Image (cartoon, rainbow, N blue to C red; front, side, top):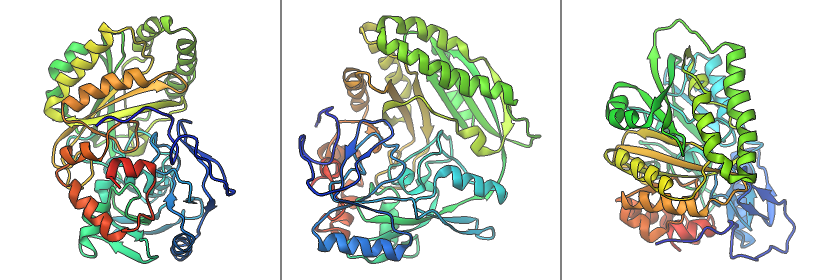
Length: 451
């Protein structure tokens, strides 16, 4: 069933909390909340005490990370748990190949610590400002033929439940919570720490290359099969794409030269692009021309570096985003439909469409649960009207059995998710057991998981 594209808050439109609290807004500015109170516990014991206190006061509880989700997953009018004081790296175990990080550790901090230890995650997304708990709880992913999302790399996690109990969840301990809770949307409790599997650091060679849209479509399956990590960006109003292929390398390291990196990643991808988006917002008729220039602005380049310096890049231009996971075999058809829709409409789209892939995993609410998937992400510059574009794209993705990213804009609800997630009931039954009184609910979770 479809919902609405209204600006998101926790609760019905017009509701205001009369008690004092620190107003919160997400990175994109499309979600806001005023909690009754804001807390920043410095230990799991303090966190458990805050959960018990909230329950005694009749308030709901939601943890918030870096605010990089575009949905109201973390919005609350109850108690907002801030991550600033839960930022310790508890352990790095080389023999076991694990690292344990508290919930508020940002991915950039985790990556830097691991690199200093000669270790790395196997795969990651393309930004690293999120906290580890926020990123995993919403299903953040990168692209990979064989390696899956960040949550799929979890080996154990620590969870504070509704009665203030602290559960350690792993394949051996509370395995049913581990199985479903690695992507938990904050609905099962508050994650206080996560143990990830890591491996010795390695080198990736990135090959970035412009390529015509029709060639990318014709060779999509081959490009996915032949590369460990493949993704591409299509520039609406053009026939141009930019492709990126990342594969493990024996080296030697050959990073992007500092000047070239600044020109490509800061000046063009952020500074000039910001100006182009602002111009397009003011003068939509200029967007197709800008898109043609943008699609030719980045030239081919090849470089070799450690993983997080290849997988991630700075994203300073603010936007709103919708992303759907569809069966990988449906990718080419769906992307062609998207392109045809844009071309026959009078829409003016300044952001490229991003396409990535992931293998099937075994997490109940993972967008890749049980099926090899392709991800199609669409963006609009912050402050621009996105509703019509996202509605058209969503209709295409839903027709292919799409599953929206939990942290990105969509209008789907629990009735829809029961049809596209075979293990949806497994998750909701676990939620009923761990949080029968819905201490951890909010408006968004009532929509996507049911009351």
